[in-house]
Image 1 (cartoon, protein in one colour):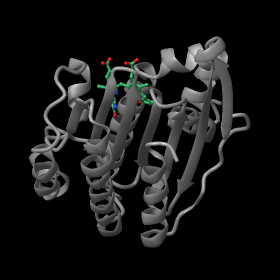
Image 2: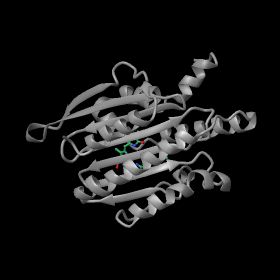
Image 3: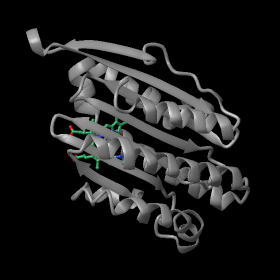
Length: 251
Ligand code: DBV
């Protein structure tokens, strides 16, 4: 059992028990990918598996799980709401590299600067944030341009301590996900045309940023090549742009 497998299993179990989730298509070649890297004694098989679901209010719930031995484990888990809900994104980036663990967990707001939005989608999370923040000290600098996509409840830490990941980070991940599911259950459909246009615009900005700046791009290119990586990013991890192009007949 690798470090993030229980995170993945528990997340899927939570989602299944509380929402009506259905499979979301994963393009061929992405469900399971493996490569052997390194030489001799340092040889390691790097396996990336993908998971994806959808629900009536959630356009895509998806996870990428990279397993490459003790010093390379990644779980990137993101939920994209349908464009007729004002829900935030659920975003978890759990990364174990030779230098240690890097943890990013947030409900990423559509409208970070909007007071009403904060009251609705950030304030309820703050008690959970404070509960874990004391165990997970601020991880330091992160890209300035990413700031607009994070909430004040952004848990961001770097640690060498695997036990901390297995206990506090695991509990935080599940608490954030449960709180996210509460939001999903409570969310009402948006019909105001101006609001719908704003949601689509912000979702695309977010997606664009994440696809453009994906910090895993270098890693995936090394393991699986450039072509596979770009297809994986734009055709699966952050696929909304292509889906919209298809709907409007441009794709
Ligand atoms: N990150 C992803 C996806 C990954 C992934 C889809 C499938 O968005 C993994 C894999 N993140 C990943 C890896 C690293 C990071 C780092 C492998 C390590 C990269 C390296 O050091 O080589 C939050 N993730 C990071 C970093 C941040 C985030 C700030 C450090 C980047 C750096 O120091 O340059 N998560 C990241 C982010 C957003 C988010 C910027 C949102 C806007 O949700």
